[in-house]
Amino acid sequence: MKTLIKKLLLMGGVLALAASTQAGTITVKGSDTLVILAQKWAEVYMAAHKDVKIQVNGGGSGFGFQALQSQSTDLCDASRPIKAVEQGNCIKAFGKRPTEYKVAVDGLSVYVNSDNPVNELSLEQLEGIFTGRIKNWKQVGGKDMAITVYSRENSSGTYEFFKEHVLKGKDFLASAETKPGTAAVLQAVAKDPKGVGYGGAAYGAGSKHLLVKKDDSSPAIEPTEESVLSQKYPIWRYLYIYLNPALDKGEIGAYLNWIRSEEGQKIVKDVGYYPLPAHLREK
Image (tube, rainbow, N blue to C red; front, side, top):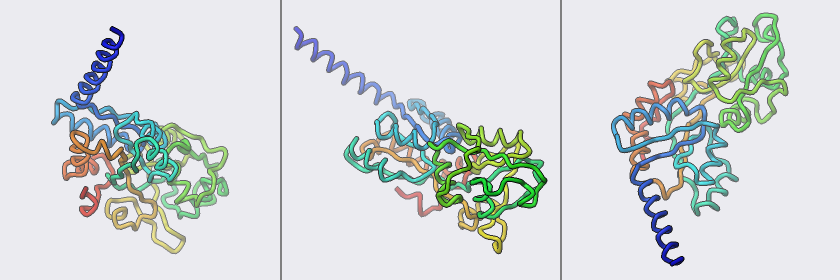
């Protein structure tokens, strides 16, 4: 009798798993930078595919990679490439390197309050501000007032990208006020005349983005589609989706193909990021 009960329970578990798979639920976790875009993708796709449910959660790229390693998400959104240790953990978990898809291009913007007279900064000045070497706006042509730095938490891919590419690996100043998401950073800057923060190109309501110069002798570049895709704007990056290769089929595979299609990439542009060049859309 016990053996029969165990068999029935096992069969029930298999049937429940099959039912879950047939229900077509796709889980997405990770980058806060990608949340707005990922939610819009999900909304449009579900409207056209009534049998598919897509659950989108943020938390940061690091959180997404942890979920990928623990196999508690189907798709991991990331605003930075996967690290070697994260890749190694995935190999331990499911035996293969995760598949990487580039899904959009982002011009990482630096935001100040809309009343701030400063309109452009060089990469060197940005490094000075975010590491604390430059403490007053008058040092970069602004008003005589202390600078308040807003940053992302260290689990954020945007935080890591900015630290690596703008701060050249140096630490953010200790007094930087960390916020749980890009939207929170921009809300703080919008309310603070002394504030400065950074985030994806799709954000920025209530504040203004700065033009950025590669160095003092270079022109100040606005983060537009043309300047980002041509890599003239100096702070740009790809946005990614990672997944277990074994899941890259069926409804999940169809969804990823759709994201990289003309329709999916139009949504990228509508949200405020930049679509992939055509040669990067092939699977």
